[in-house]
Image (cartoon, rainbow, N blue to C red):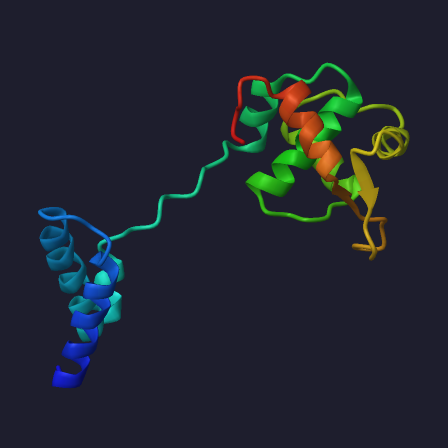
Length: 160
């Protein structure tokens, strides 16, 4: 390491501990300088000691659905939309996606799923997407829909 870089790191460490009282200043200076010098040698080494927390894992759709146990068809659709968004990272979905998820969950399908989606949209829980997917209208869960799920359907905090 070059002398200029070391001087720069020492000055950075001094600046960081300037307002501290002894004995904390000396200890903090050593720790900060050590970290700054480590970053100067190999920046990736310094980061390797701070692992990212693992992302929250979602259960499969059928387990998630049965844990929530929605009573109304609209609640079932919102539960599935929430899982698609947060569990599967799918921003927009179609009526076919909802129907397939209902099948996976072995849940009763409404006679007219389009009406259920329209009802969710009237409540502000879903909105139409900008583009069609596979020739079908796309939908997305709104922030109102997320809040509805979190407060009304998911009081135990399952998966989200």
